[in-house]
Length: 291
Ligand SMILES: *[C@@H]1O[C@H](CO)[C@@H](O)[C@H](O)[C@H]1NC(C)=O
Ligand SMILES: *[C@@H]1O[C@H](CO)[C@@H](O)[C@H](O)[C@H]1NC(C)=O
Ligand SMILES: *[C@@H]1O[C@H](CO)[C@@H](O)[C@H](O)[C@H]1NC(C)=O
Ligand SMILES: [Cu+2]
Image (tube, rainbow, N blue to C red; front, side, top):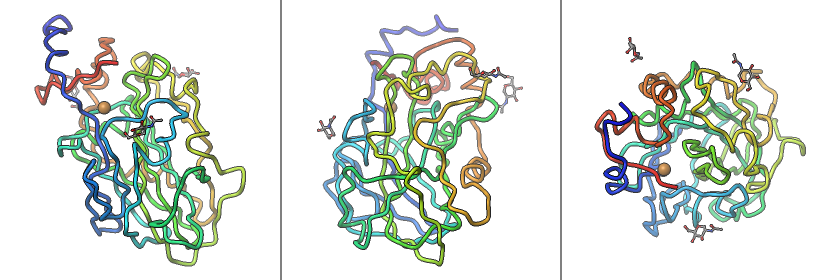
């Protein structure tokens, strides 16, 4: 199988295929855009200037994505709100990657609206992280158009928050600097009567919390694919009190579809390093990564 297609042909047909958050849905209300490099600030999610990943754990673009600019709106949410992030390519094509974690952080914008907040150097707390189950990364479900679902902590104190949903794509992470970071920042105003605030030890900076040699960032995901153990980068998921159910476990349960389970296993078994081989084999496109 691995000799049945020609590598030079694939390289020649390279199409940049990365992505961004096209739509956020909060308790059923949809917020679309702004599109990549549109110059638009209309929306609740900060526009990024490219669908390309952030490379390097200390890159300043790790905060909110490449060249991120503030959006003019904020969305209402509440403790326990269900927030989904629909990731696609910049052109609307399917999300192209299926290995690596998805991690969600929040930061408090203080008394001001997050539309006016500069998050440079701000401190974040982690509310959720999803890895893999039975050898399949939760991220893989995005390839078929499933949105990543996150539940706000049930006891989150009211306030202005940026929620930062991040995909770390690990298809090239076996070499230092190969991990692809896709951060995204969405502006919220959280209501309700929660009392939970993070403690100092929960708070980290982004960039700051990650290193290019962290075990979850410098990693060969093509070995031992059925082993679900994975060391997430960054701090532990915060415990803000409340009902005692971690948003992390709920996040996993909500991802119902695992359509690429076999692709991932097959790909790992064959030790093929090309990142988009599973899609190529299914004839969906000829996206291919060179790094
Ligand atoms: C951050 O992203 C912008 C927009 O893509 C880019 O021009 C800039 O070089 C990036 N900064 C770093 C440190 O990579
Ligand atoms: C999974 O990998 C971890 C870390 O390499 C190792 O400690 C553990 O024993 C492995 N588990 C299984 C079931 O192979
Ligand atoms: C995975 O592949 C096996 C063997 O080809 C097949 O029996 C099974 O139904 C597949 N599972 C899924 C989820 O497609
Ligand atoms: Cu990509």
